[in-house]
Image (cartoon, rainbow, N blue to C red; front, side):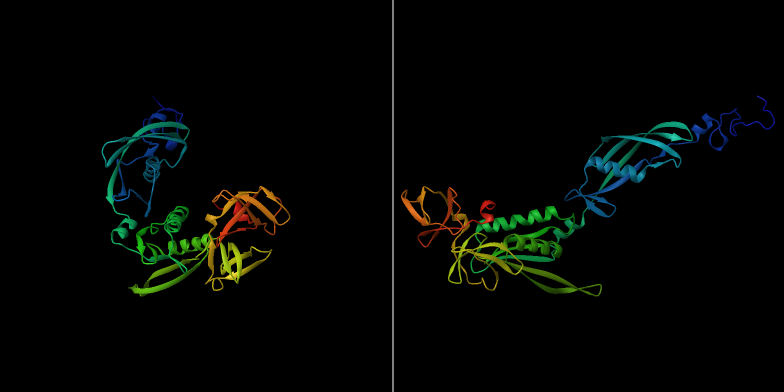
Length: 355
């Protein structure tokens, strides 16, 4: 076909308009345009011990579909002028190490709609993450020692304290150093060896907030690296010999600790309305008279202004007890067995929240 002077035509084949990018007709434009560039193969590394995936230098737990999304984002390059992009992926497992990712890509480039299919092979290689490497080498930065003041920790107490570490780890950020190297019973308590000083300190704060007591830190230099001292932390946690709500003998009378503070406990006198703060040093030599877990809740069967009667669950006989100072007519009383005699306890908020 003879073109008129000055008329537009495809620079490749000479076709008449319409023309698109670089003054080419639609067939020539499509022949030279790809909606995306996709490599035939891509690689990723999985820890052979724990299954974590190396993502941008961090070992993380990634679901399979999220892993494929990451590999696609990392490797698929869309046309620089592509708009209204759509992508679908279907995975096909070939072997333990190889997975085929079948991709359907569509989009608009210079007002022309493109749709194409690609296949990318995801190839897995084995590695070992930092956490597993250090675990295998028994690496540790801190030791937490669980102890009690004036007595041995009971097995139930140890189980509760130890379980709290799992909760702390679960709620902290995902740090590869938050692992337990070893643990076990020792004379006088229980030791937990940890991969991180930060984890040890976080657990120590959690222990004191929830069960009171004190934490003492000791750092020991074990070497030097890059001109700086390498230290290991020993964190000694001493749990009080009593719990919130217990009946204890202190200052010649009976008291109940109602809450913990940084320096001690808030104490409430049982005989009358009185609250006072006490330091750990003040409470060093207190005597536990009746643990809260052993308190009794009984029904009031009869009463006058100062005394109530209840059915003794141990003897099945009617028994009298002096009413607590704050008694308000409630149908039940909380009792503690104090040296063979029942003592009615005043009401505390933790009586309704602590089992």
